[in-house]
Length: 411
Image (tube, rainbow, N blue to C red; front, side, top):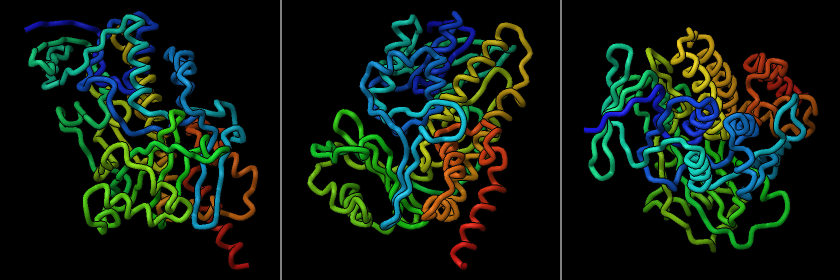
């Protein structure tokens, strides 16, 4: 059995692991990336937020990503019957990127890993972590490849960016009840040969089916589009048939997009993910940290998944490097408290989306430009900017604004 040593082992080569690896490579750190799958591979989480761009830039990816011609995303649109609410990222509160991308993740993630390999990063694809043991301040990791080759690795620190694989959450029994409702999702892709011109291509669109159920439309620059539904398990369970039949029945529940996609064959059979929200008891411990979906996943309604993945991956890399070089790191305050702050902000927005309160604020016929700019900054992923009252006092201020909206209906 082969045995290798690195200061830091990164589990998972998605955006979180790649950002961590990109930063650490720039610091000439001793790292290796273990990835269970072979790239390219399909992944959900296709609509990014502007905050991601800061993290891609710091990890050394922004120029190579600009060259790919991915679909530029300038904002988000929400539709409820005949009401439309649009948020333009260039009109958000505070500084930061005014745009991002919508990406087929199979292509996007491979661009990141190809770039890492060209920079000398050792990535072992089709390599599954089968056990982890912490002995004498070192992690002993056993892996198995797709061909059955077994390897044992030793390291000072593990960054778990395994996403839905949730390697350490399973290995160390860290799973915890999710904070958000038990929702499920079903999604597929189409090749949209006659997409409407104009703003349609540069936005993610959310169409509301009912207060707790919505449909997404994400157009890509290659002509494909991602379609999906998110809702309570009870809503999805009412449809009978195979996955394609079920999906087409769901499309008939839309209003704005009804019949729009009838003549487009599905690129793949719709995929269903049950109980999509995830959580853990804690996000760090002796010699390890969890990032992105390997720690917590809220809900896809505001596309926050990759934003948190890259934010936590970059921060974890910085702190892990300090720790393995002998510096004392306060993980509770420097990592968990910081990440939790952003999660708490988005949790409030997700909660009030499904309560219906945020929807009422969004669809106000004459929204305050200042309030809209401040909410837009949150939707852009800038959930750590305490200068924004909709970040600083997120729970209280949303409740206050909702009461004003409701009172205006009475008057």
